[in-house]
Image 1 (tube, helix red, strand yellow):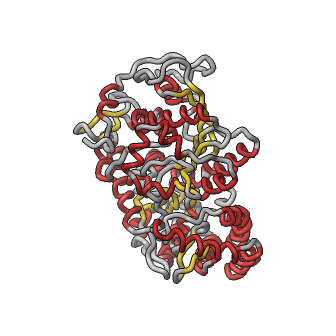
Image 2: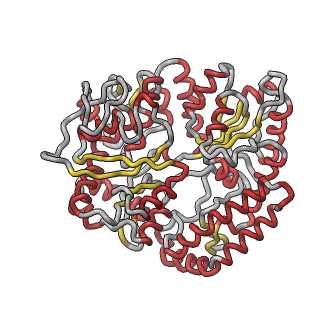
Image 3: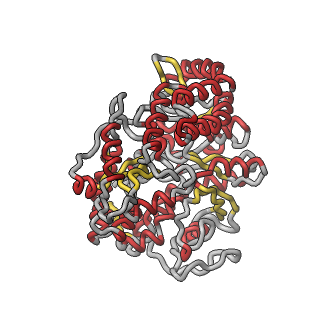
Length: 528
C-alpha cells in the first residue's frame, strides 16, 4: 500500500484514551476526552515553537479555540516540539501577519497559500532561506521533497529555498465552485444556464417569479462568498493579481480588456438587483451563508465543497436540491474556475529564528507529515472513522466529525495524503443525508476540475519591484472597481479601466512589465 494513500501503522496504533490537561497553562476544554497517541520521539524538555494558523471561525465553543482544543493538546503530547498556535483571520491573513512581522511578534513558522506573499516576505528579509537546515535536520521531508521535484520551483525564491511545501491532493487542486438550486429551475421550467447571458436571465426569474413559493419578493438570485469576485473574473479568463502571456508579452491581469469585461458583468448584475447589494460589507460572508442556508438565494458563487451549507439548507428547507453549476461561457469561451498549483501550503521560517528553533521546527514538520497529518484530517480510528478495505477512511458519525474534527485540518500544514473523488461515498458517514452529499461532492469535484483554469505561467514574478508595486496597486484598483460596480452612473467600466491603467502607469507599471518580461525570458524553462 502506498504511503501516500494511508498510513496503516499509524491508523492501527491510534487506540486513543483519555488525556488529562496537556500543559499547566492550558485550561480543560469541553467535556470530551482529548485523543492520546504514542509518546513523542524526543526526550527531555521540548523546544517551544509558534506557528500561524488560519482562523476560519469554525471551532465550536465547546471544543475551545484555535489556540487550545483537543487537537492542539494531542499535538503537544505527541510531537517532538511544543507548539503555540497563532490564529490570523483567514480574510485578513496577510495584513495580520505583516502587522505581526512589523511589530517583531510574528510566529516562528509563517504560512500562506500565496507564493507571491511568501516571495514578498523573502524580499523584505522577514523570512530566511533554509536549504542547509533541511539537509542537516530533516529525514522524512527531505526524502519526500526529493521524490517530488515538481515542488522545487514553488519553494525557490531568488535561487534559495524559502519555504517547505507538500503536494495537494486532488480535492486541494479544486478550489472555487458555483452552485444552483435545481428545484428552483424545475419549478420555474428553466434550463441550467450555460452562458453569462443565460445566467442573467435565470437570475431575473429567480428574483421575480417567487421560486420559494411564499408569495413574497424576498429572494436574492446570487450570493457571494470570498471566492465570488474571482469566479466572476475567471469567466472572462482573467484574475486580478495574475500575470498573463499576451502574444508572448507579460501583462498584468488588471490591465487587460478582459478585466474591464468582468467589471462590466459584475456591475450589470448589481445594477439589476441580481446580487445581494450588501455583499461589499459582508466581510465574513455570514449574511451570504445565511441567505443560502435559509433558502432565500438561488445561485451561490463559493467553493466546490459545501457540506455544512448543504446540511444546514436541508434542515431549513428539506426539499431543496442544490447542485454544482459548471462555469458559464462568456464571449471568450468556457473557462475553468480557479485551480491551485501542485504545491500546497508554503511554510516559511521567521528571519529571527535561531538554529535550535529551526531544528525543532523542521523535526516538527517531519513528524507532521509522517504521523500527525492523518489524525488532523480524520481524527481517531473507531471514534471518528473506520478504514474501508484497509485504505479509505469512512466517517462514523457526521455530526460528531463536524463538531470534533473538521476544524483540525488547519493544523496539517504539511501532508502527503491523496484521495480520489470516487472515494467520497465510502469515506462519508452512512446515514442518508451524508450519503446524498457524498455523491454530490464527487459530482462537484469532477465539475470543478472539468474545465482547465487558465494559468499561462506556473507562478507570478517574485522580484521585489513587482511585489511592491502590486501591494501598493491592489487596494487602489480594488477601490476603483468597487466604485464602478456599486456607484451607479458615477463610473462606467470603461472609465474604471482608464483609471486602473493610469494608476498602474503612475506607480511604475511600465518598468515592472519590462522587468517581468526579462524575468520570464530568464525563467521560462521551469514556468510551464
